Image (cartoon, rainbow, N blue to C red; front, top):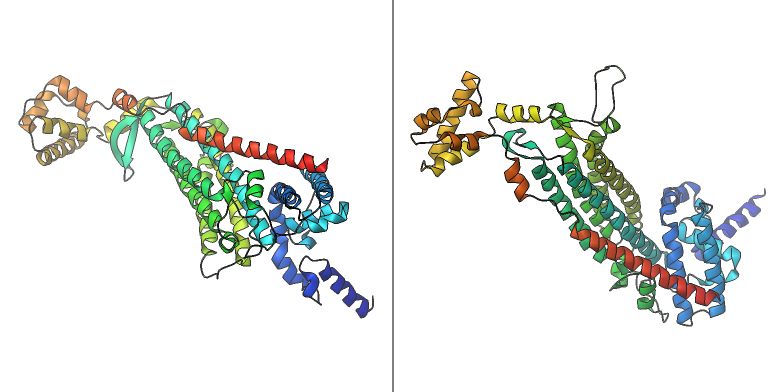
Amino acid sequence: MPLEIIAMEQVKMMANKLWGGRFDKAADGEMYSFLSSENVALDTALIAYDIEGSLAHVCMLAKQGIIAKKEAGEILSALAAVQKKAGEGKFSLDPALEDVHTNVEAAVTAITANGKKMHTARSRNDQVSLDTRMYMRVAINEVSAALLELQASLLELSKKDCVFPTYTHTQVAQPASLLFWCHAHHCEIERDLERLSQLYARVNECPLGSGAVAGTTWNIDRNYTAKLLGFSAPTANPMDSVGSRGELEAELLSHLYLAMAHASKIATDVILLANKRLIVLPDEYSTGSSMMPQKKNPDPFELVRGKASRMLGLYVHAAGLLKSVPSGYNLDSQESKYALLQGVKTAEQSFSILAHALPLLKFDKEEIVLELEKGYACATELADLLAKKGVPFRSAHSVAGGIVKECIAKKKFLSALSASEVSAVAGVKITDAELKEAVSVDKVARFSAAYKIPAASAHAKALEARVKALDAAHALLEKEVKALVK
């Protein structure tokens, strides 16, 4: 092909870009791939949201008289056709068209020439912010549902209540109960759910109408668009709306990291207790060794720990993008998309695995009792008993420590001591019943009475309300679209 024709084709290709009008030469192929190839692949997760956002935007344009209702009807019909195709998995993104926004617009324009009008009064800058917020709303709800399932699994596990060890510095500390352990992790997840609910309120503001950076001179109705898409309100400032892309993503990833750190703690407890033979791992959530026949490995629990490290990396990745960028939109923020999508997927998978595995754990109560006896776990209760008898606590602590030291030397447990032995050392009168109660490792009744796990979290109702609000917005948007299409 002659060079003149090649040059003409390049100019024609640039003219087909949304921004190609002021360019004479085509973008360098390597540069173009660097900008768009990965981004387009990630944009597949945003197709449904981009189409939905476009449906609402076109309805608003028609309502405001910016485009004719007949034109809007044709555009909406075309968008519905693309939406159906996407729902069937038959709509794939063309990397040559840079992103999901251009792909959707091109598909609509191929059906009706009026598709060229659907981008009026908006920019890809506010579009991607919109798509991301819509994705994040659903992601927050789905992750919250996964965390609620994990809480439910802790409740189910707690029904196997038995004596249970606690540790500090990985050394035996005091006896407790399985319910107590489950309740502790339940409380951690409650904080995770609270953080996600608070973030949802910040995410649930509509950036559409912010334009490229400074809004638009068109007479748009941002409140109407926000209502159609189920947002609580439009965002306050266009520059902030498009220039803060990545901030909410980083915040979500920070919350997901904390939740993953909690999941990692649960997984690590299971691994350590299984190593001590106090917990029996379920066959369904264990693996073996290709060489050592006796092995039963806690691989999924170890991988949850590993993925918590990945989540930290994704958070740092997203948070790092926020520094040293000027006001307004910058393409650095595109990098947050990868971290966001990977983070949500990682969290949902990890929480699900734990939720399904935990109720299947079994406990060796005899080994647990032995672990507590060998760790002299009731030494604190013994010191407290002496203090209740009038011995100053510091002195009681010293006496109890000496008793433990003597027991270790004689290879016997606290439960083997007699009241007369302890009374003689402590210098106070202790009865057999008092000593037995103090040094018995079975504290299940006391802990089980004090640490009940609620049958349903209050966050479940909040999640249900958020989902219902989105469903109501979908119904309203569908109604408005049908009216214009008719």
